[in-house]
Amino acid sequence: MGFSKLHSAQVSILQPHIIDVEVDISNGLHCFTIVGLPDKAVEESRDRVSAAIKNSGFTSPKQKNQKVTISLAPADLKKEGPIFDLPFALAYLLASGEISFNPEKKIFIGELSLDGELRAVHGILPVVEEARRKGFEEVFVPYKNREEAALISGINIFGVKKLSDVVEHLNKKIILTAELETKIIYEEYKSEYGFEDIRGQNGAKRGLEIAAAGGHSLAMCGPPGTGKTMLAKAFCHLLPQMSFQEVLEVTAIHSVAGALHDTLVTRIPFRAPHHTASYSSLVGGGAIPKPGEATLAHRGVLFLDEFPEFERRVIDSLRQPLEEKVITVSRAKGTAHFPADFILIAAMNPCPCGYAGVMGKECVCSPLNIINYKRKISGPIIDRIDLWVSVEKVEHKSLSEEGGGESSREIKKRVEGARELQKKRFEKFSSTPHGQKIKTNAQLPNKKLMEVSPLSKEVRDFFNSSAEKLDMSARAYHRVWKVAQTIADLDKSATIETKHLLEALQYRPKNG
Image 1 (tube, rainbow, N blue to C red):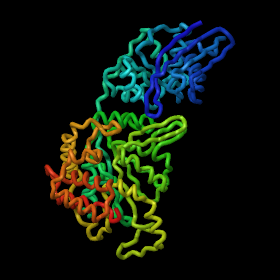
Image 2 (image 1 turned 135 degrees about the vertical axis):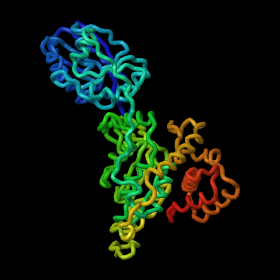
Image 3 (image 1 turned 180 degrees about the horizontal axis):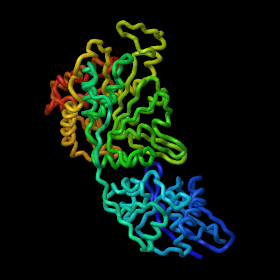
Image 4 (image 1 turned 90 degrees about the vertical axis):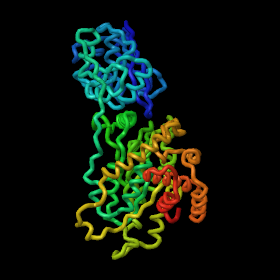
């Protein structure tokens, strides 16, 4: 009786795919079938679509003796979620002859309520970007998703409130206006604390400044109540705002993960999972892999408080992202590569009770408990963390004094200056081995160090002698070199000097 074909899209393991929606209507007893590996939410769309069509003033498939078959291609890709409700309804109306339009170069996305209203869906940004790459000219999305979709230029975005509006626009009874390109309004990271609010801890503040300037990971160790959490929260104030491309990248990740609370992510991501977080919640997982906290922290900060209290497996899962800035999750149904270029800020106590070596406090931990506590952080993880700083107990008299030293704004200016030097330095390098553009010293591949950051003979001899005395691994050696380069950048020095290396070496743990 009728056939139609139009286009939709979905995201699978962070990768967008264009989906062809085909509808065939034939005579016979009523039957509504969806083929092409639909999940439960896609199968249930039969009832939502039928009700939405009826309540929008058209004849529902259930009101006719028809066999309706909907095919989703490619057939070997799992189709997930209610994102196909709108294309199902339009394809059926087109096949049944109730509407007539040219579906070429158009993408339709959206969940339908029973009365024909369109509800917001996840993963809009990457599918709109894919639609533009594939040469489509128009994308119809739920009204609440319009600002997110309109971030992508060069393609017409139509924000739609209900099914009948789409139909009348396609029948040229009303003309919907394409959305204007969304302009990003940057928001600074908001925290109740700045560096000026934290008394003392000048050594930790300096370490965090270096971490922000070079994108380095950092661990803080000290007794409870010394300000480790406050320092971590204030850290985001030091980071430069994201570029437009980074906003697109981070917003797309949060959209796919269903973690997009505002229209866009314009503030530096700060993720602080509890120490009871599971392995899959941190690295991502599921039968069809979905991003975890490490990926949601991409281009931002992953703060792990009570670091040794995390499961050993969770801590060791950070090896790959700290080294390669990506997480690989393999499942029977596929392998996913999730971006995970974050700055790790870890905080820990010296022992389970927190008071080992603290003047005026008695440690109640047995030597075995302390050894087991420290063993949870393996050598490979210690090697991969660039800076280790001590956060000491603050004298009470300093807590009532006015002024906590330099403000976050003042330190941020130095960080931005160092980042600008790095940007110019790395302009000639296209990307990291995983396709990400090099922007900070921490991202620089080791093999490029000699070319980008050469050492004079005097400095090199001193560095090699120090590394031998400290029995450094090759990884730790290269990481100290990168930290020294960041310190030189903060110092606006054209080359790494001995004093820069001396400071960088102070941030290595005694056992690494």
